[in-house]
Amino acid sequence: MDSIPERFSLLGGPYQPPRVRADGYLRCAMRGWTKVDGYTEAPIPWPAKWGRSPILCGDLIRAVGREAKATVAYHWGVSVITVYKWRKFLGVLEWNEGSSDLLRYARRKAGHRKGSVAKAVFKNSYSLVKAANPRRRSREFVEMMREITCERLKQVGVLDPRRRAWTPEEDRLLGVFSDAEVAVRTRRSRRAVMSRRRRMRQKCPTSSWTHWTPDQIKLLGTKPDHDLSEQLRRPESAIAAKRLKLHVRSALRPTMRSWAPEEEALLGVEPDQRVAKKTGRTVGSVSAHRRQLEIPAPITHLRRWTAEEDRMVCYGSPQQVAKKLNRTVGAVLSRREFLAEMEQRWTAEEDRLLGRAPDEEIARGIGKSRRAVRSRRMALRIRSHTSGLPRRYWSADEDRLVGTMPDQQLARQLGRSKEAIRLRRIHLGIQSP
Image 1 (tube, one colour):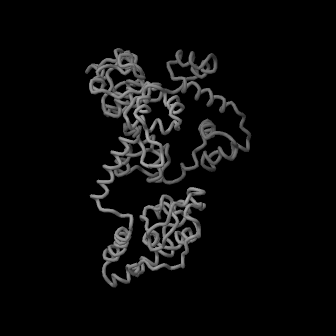
Image 2 (image 1 turned 120 degrees about the horizontal axis):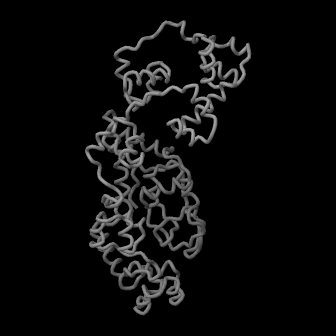
Image 3 (image 1 turned 60 degrees about the vertical axis):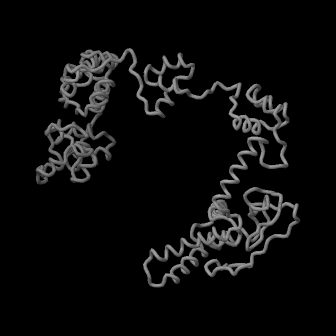
């Protein structure tokens, strides 16, 4: 045997193969109990399955955990990818003692040259492993074996000569009966029958799946998916999936109509709910079309609640009250919650706390909402905790940032509250990003 290159010298060892008969069994860490079919033709001969796939056991497990991937691949006659799979299964770290030793060798050979040279020497180890692998064959040999394999599969149906070949009588059963029935008749497994049927390009008689024809593909997008489902006798989900895969746009439903210029002129001028009523469309359709045209939503000015509305808001269902007051259901529910908070009793001790600390801090201390604390403070005409501090005016640079990012993010960047950012944005007439 040729001398072993210095870069592939083993740190541990000696690594001895386990003693086993030629037809015996060994316990593989990955496969379990495995029959030994022979030994590999490698610098370290090792029991193997089929005579070429080393069994992961004994000293090989110890070598995988300590030696470099290229070193193990060289001595056991396998590829680096195989060693990578062994490491991954055994939970070995990507960089172990052998990897460090191989890197030191590359740096020593490179000397004081640039790191790219050392990297090239390190990569060259893998090319040496490929050249020393006795199982490695030329490209011409691989192509020849592929042709022989395909021809044998086509004629016999199996690669292993120990397996029973398929007869013409058995092939004629494929596609006529179900795979389970053919498996019973031929005394084979259902998976073997299915694999043979697919290789012979026979359709399963119990399956409704069929290949898409060019004529069927041309119909995609010409009609709604529901209509094509009835015409092609395919599920609507299958038609939609095929259309999305081919990037074919869906056809408009009969109920859909194009937007007129007069309708588009209303977008961004009036609220989406009002535009939906005028155009006879849904709010979601109006909102989606407005966003598609990159038109910002109009700024809605808040309408203050009157005393008469406060008396009416607590009677009746939210839907009826919202319709009567021309407000949203969410606004009605929020106002009910606010009025319930305002009816809570305030003690003298709680009133004395107002204005001495931020409203959020007082709200947490007395177990009330910030909105209730702020309303109580304003009702008693108590100035805010921050009113005595010097006022911080908005600069031109800060105004240019308003609306370019979410209010919460801009508040952290400028050191202001989120409410201040929101009020400034509304004052400048800028939509929320």
